[in-house]
Length: 255
Image (cartoon, rainbow, N blue to C red; front, side):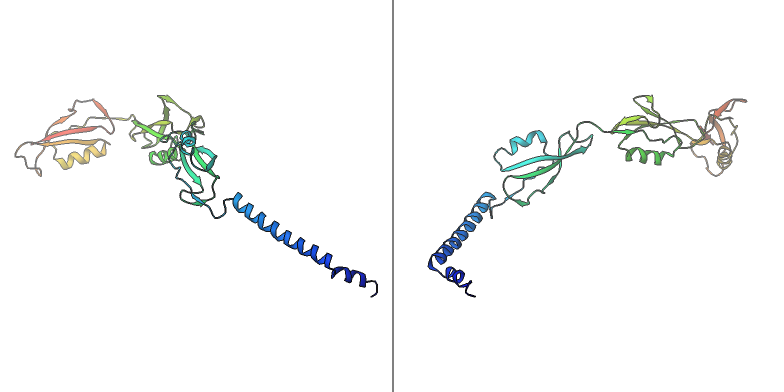
């Protein structure tokens, strides 16, 4: 106990208490000055609205921000759209109108200038509608669609780019136009031209459908009764031994 008396006496001495008070006041002042400096440094309680950069081009941004207290950084440039100029801003973070501190960095997504490459999908033998959907899912454009004789009705037989055949798996740029060669469902089979003379329209329909032909124009003479009229002329005309391709049409004239 006697050993603690000098320490206790020192702790309640005037010099110690004065120095302690000075130290506490100094600490309080230091904390207050630091807080004030931090507030000034970070523009405490000061904020500005983020401008709308969407659809602007990155090349115009420096001029646009010349008198504005913002910085920007491109965070993504992998999106390609053939209908949008390269360098167009399509997204930003923070979003337009959001309140932020001055000198905040705005992160931007822009469109790229070069179309990415994809592998040509294998749509040979695929139905026309499904083939078109597949091409679009790969970012390709569906061009012309030409039909040729083949029994695989509405199936894709060939794919062309710039008039040249392209094989599945070939490297191709997104946005490329792909033309399709499609089967008409009839092939190259031919049948003899039927003789329709003297037949009523109902029999004509039955015979033509049975030979995989189509009924073309039906022309009735003036005053003809459609229920009793019969064929007196046809085109192509009947010539024994003459043939036409399945799927072709025959026009008939009735009286």
